[in-house]
Length: 466
Image 1: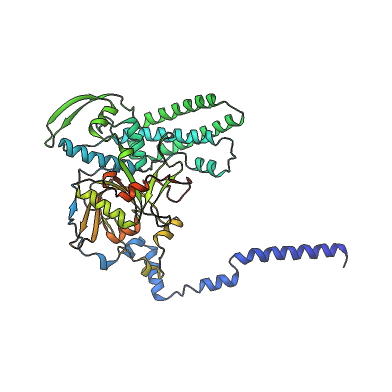
Image 2: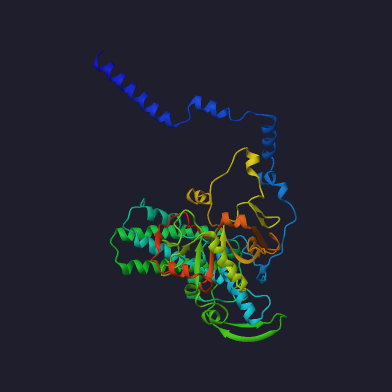
């Protein structure tokens, strides 16, 4: 065999070997034939296929055996203070946090209808998050663009979601104002377009800051450039949300609508009178995350709303211990910030969260058997929505049967603006609960003394409620 033929032979063998290696992990023709045999095309399969092709899967999987009349009586209940509506925005975390304070203010001053301004707090939330991103870009400016942190920052420059930590950080720094002093706008009710423009501008500014760092810009020059950039963001926010008030006059009404008191306020003096000035110190966030060790404190890096604020920190506990503290709080007429994976098994028409609402297994002819731990680890489930926990139904034996939350989707959604969840659903899809420290157990307070275990920004638990 001459050298030319030998070279061709070696090349052919190498190519064949490479193709064989590739085909080992691909779908071969024989494998495809075996896969195709899993669908037999029976009359039952055809009927299901026809049904799914023309209908919402949830309607077809709706479990008829679970449509009995819903029990709406609760043994422990804090009266709702009126249903709010976050409209088409991801501000559930903000509505929920302010609703907890609102309930206390209404009870203390015997008011009727009353809301804090969500637009005001949201304005400064977006400004602070913009600074968090830009300063993060500066801090990591010498790292390559494909560095994990840099990549994460540019993927997540801004969002309208968040957690109770954001409520605490924003309110403690900027105070509160009544809703009628800074009302909602179209952009606050419908945040996506404004958010897209802000993110586009922030990414552009982030690249500009990286270019300055690469050229050896001094910290003072970077700070000056960042300030100018935030001025652009501030103007965009004003155009969308309005000018945040620095002082205002406001008249408090009683439950019958009669004026009681008119006074001058700043956002901070209004917070001092009608809100809670110790949100950071007085509350603890509890988490049920079976993928982590219990009785440990954790914090998520960059999961905060202010650069100079607090990373979201929680105490991880078994679900039954969280329930016990929730019931203690409710018995003392105190609502709580609560978050969960609200999209799982939600019958929105009834306002019921029940793992038996939909029988997807029978419809699809397979099982969906991941545990809560496995769902977290595989990003299948996580905290997606915050609401205000306001009721529990406990029988004479001490067993909790169901729970109820005040939602922020308007009074026509769910059960009169509320959602009712079975205790089984609570076990599987509840994630976070914020309780006042006076309702926390001694064991929780002891865990709080630990130095939190810091998890990276891309941890499965990072995602804020929307």
